[in-house]
Length: 545
Image (cartoon, rainbow, N blue to C red; front, side):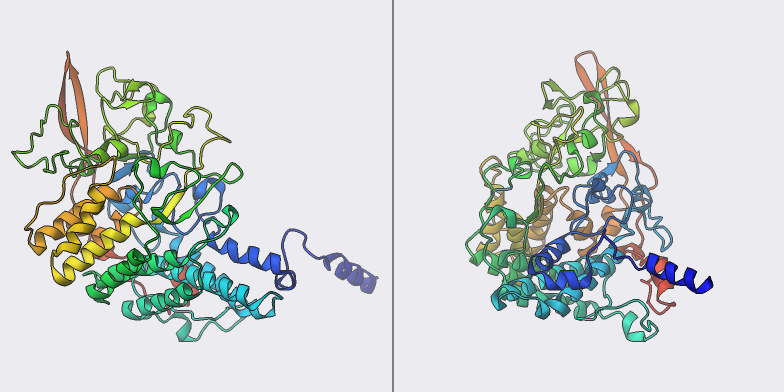
């Protein structure tokens, strides 16, 4: 009876799973194999509220708390593990919303290595294999870029495909390379990828896959980072040349309508170099309800800080601190850079048929309005990315189709301007790059003043990045690579309290989030404690943690 039971048990357990594909199936079918490659542009959901139930892409992108809410751009109304980072309470045991970057990146790198190790077994033309190999190298480089910019020098796996049951005690598996070595590896991967990637893909169904421009854009960003003070692992000349390579492709142009660039679900713009696209069958967070004012039944998610509002110039090109600018503290939102109006909802802004009311008493979008628990703590709401054709109430199955842009041409121009200015000072090409952005139709800001010193141009470029790229996951990394986060991230998180008194408003600055703090160790994220423990203590933690 025992032998019969054992035999039945073995037969019962010997079942081929129907909810997953075997290695043999993937390698034996060229269509399945290519689908496996394409799905490497995505990643598994590892933390709460990541990608609203859909698989995350390369960055956090359209999740509830944007990366901006870890910076002086915004705070997230409902916390969602962002406040501990704003308050400098990061630890290896508690990494907040930043905790999944290490694990997701290395999982993806292993999956890429698996595909590269097996592609020669797949029946398809060599030219198509070469294309997929180039895509896989781009994806691998992007994952390393995400590791480097968050943790510094990382473990370089090479082409290794780790398997369960292997001996994981060898030190090389956990030895972190230097920042320079890590950068060199990722850049080399991008050089090889760029050689094999097309200038563009032929059909809409291929949108969102890497191109030569995407590889060169990522290279431009990495080399800009490498030359920056935090990294000190490259030269400004190399960073300028990398940005120039993208410009020389002569394929990309600034979009004629700054605000519209971020809402067109088709993403048909010559400014977009690489993006993730969505459709009705695969949507992201419904941005309008997640970030809209409470008086519109929105949840007031990522609310802009006064710190950011104050950066926007007057439309005459002068700062609000300049006594000749014409700035009126009693009418603070008049005559500002048009990108301010495309980015931030403020008291009095026209939105969906009525002015926004963040004043008290009685403002519909203040704590006196409906759903007071969704009221902005800063006195502002997010405007950028919001599509007015989407409903705020009951947006399900309708909203959530805006593209998330990883690289766009404005970033490349700013990369060039910064790198060239640092390498050679503010020559004519630096002025041309930054003024091209400022003069685009719909923005039409005056050119930056002539005769600037290198230091003055540096500040102008940094301000331009802050305004042009607001909420696009740049500020967090910019202030760190410039090594000014000890200033910007230690400044209080300011908002505004607006009191209505008859027909006038009184504007009072307030602290919107108490306890904001940044220490030297926070220039890098901590590697999660679980990863250190999994290495048997061999993986080196970042200093200070």
